[in-house]
Image 1 (cartoon, rainbow, N blue to C red):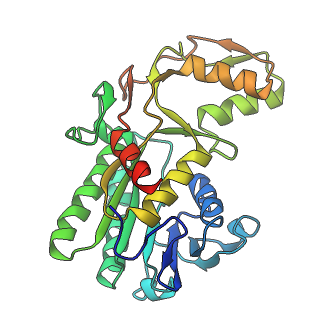
Image 2: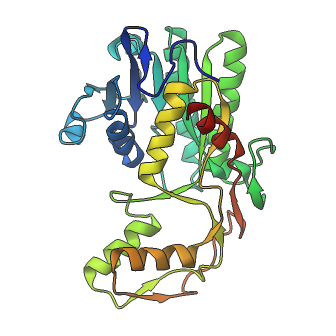
Length: 298
């Protein structure tokens, strides 16, 4: 459903543009979200620990240097009292098994978000993770009970639950954008796409990988950013929404598609690595809720 103050993707709120703040703006997802938001009539405020990180990537955004792990009392005012906060920030990735996620990240992020909401933030979008579903296989819908089995998934799901409890005490609009897999230029070095790209650039003859038969759900990062922008501007109280392709693809087929698309000349050393133990062999997102939202916006 539409929010009380937006009627279309242009983000107009009466005569004034919608003001959207973005945390984690200098990260992989953040840079693409900023680029997507700049295509629309919204006012953007981007936060980063170091301004120089966004020197060449945020043309119209107002950049605020802020460490959200040590939030100031007036952080909501410093961000210009935004109408919507897109919360992308999270440290410690891609080490999904680190206890850091719930020992350090979870309390930091809840404290920051709570302070923003108590200061008057009306609408919040937070990115979650498909790891919240744990070892459940097949098509995963938002109606399933979350059963995270690694520290990252546990911490993200706990943050979602904390925010939902907070919402009962102080109402606000909440959308939990549960991200599946993504790929694209500028992805962190530990990702499959970046590792393959680096191997090609080095001139390696072979790329070491798993057997590649696991089924996953992948979207290009530009599409992920587009969907986040739609959810943040037009559907600010949607609860959990899978941000996914809704179609399973084997990792081997995905990688072979990259080779063809990019004209990369490298062989695949299949079976070099074992399959990950913290995720099932076959899972992907159920996209019905997302598609219903997109149809409303069409």
